Length: 96
Image 1 (cartoon, rainbow, N blue to C red):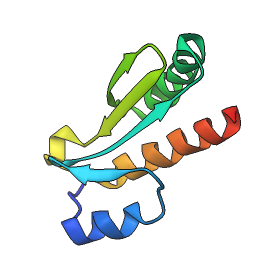
Image 2 (tube, one colour; image 1 turned 135 degrees about the horizontal axis):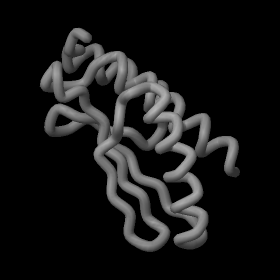
Image 3 (cartoon, rainbow, N blue to C red; image 1 turned 45 degrees about the vertical axis):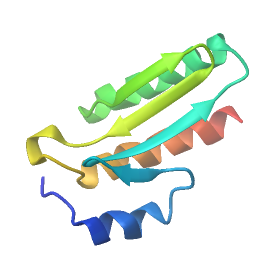
């Protein structure tokens, strides 16, 4: 998969509210009502990530979830990252 240019990344991020680009990755965070809700969403994302064979770098503390996406083989952001970001957004929307 080919690494996207900074301009391509910034153009694509315009379609993603709350996502930013830094340190060769795209990043976002979510806050949930409690740990159970955060973990439930993480589980849904985990199944999707496994299906796509593309896994996030993420962290969770209580009701906070932070996600970073990059394609390690390309040493940066690729179409795979935006495909997973879209799926994550769809999962978040479905839980609201």
